[in-house]
Each structure stands twice: as C-alpha cells, then as structure tokens.
Length: 113
View 1: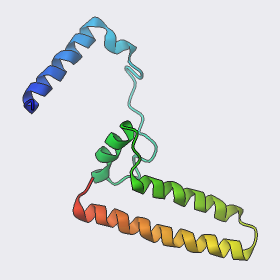
View 2: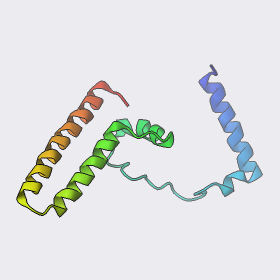
View 3: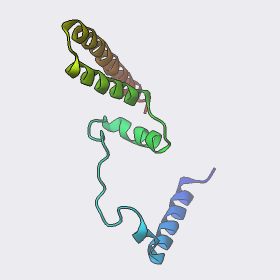
C-alpha cells in the first residue's frame, strides 16, 4: 500500500501538470465557488464526508432512504382526504420520525460514518 505522503505528492504533481496544460480550465465549475449540495447543511458534520463518498459511489445510505420516505409521507399527509387516512399516515410518519431520530443518535454515539 502506498504511503499517504507519496500519494499526496503524486496528486500534487498531477494537479500541477493539469494546471500547466490548461486541462483544469475545461473542468466543470472551474473558477466558480463550490455550490453546497442539497441536504449538506442538514447533514450532521460528522456524517458529511461518509455520505459524500457513498453518494459519489452511487450508494444511498439507509438514513437517506428514510428521509425520502418521510418526505413522501408528508406529501401524502398534506393530500389526505378523510380523517381516517390522515390519522393512519400521521401515525406512520410519527413512527418513522422516531426511527430516524434513533438511527441518527446511534450513528453519533458510535461514530459510524
């Protein structure tokens, strides 16, 4: 396995070569500030890097799936017609929010990213 210092040096050399050749100027977003991704500010800081790596690899963390489910339930709740349907959706949403809170708390306590 390569030493981190050697890897850092190689990355630095490649970036310098790309900059000298003008290759970096054709990169998407060159010279512009980075835009924060959706949900970046809402994601706990200790989870951001791990979630970013998973996202770039095309993997969605289970917690993100839970957030999507919560958004769908909120939409269903806002469109629900009768009280019975609203009550059932609200109950499911409440249970899901508790589950999300427990998952995020467990992640924070364990330090898992």
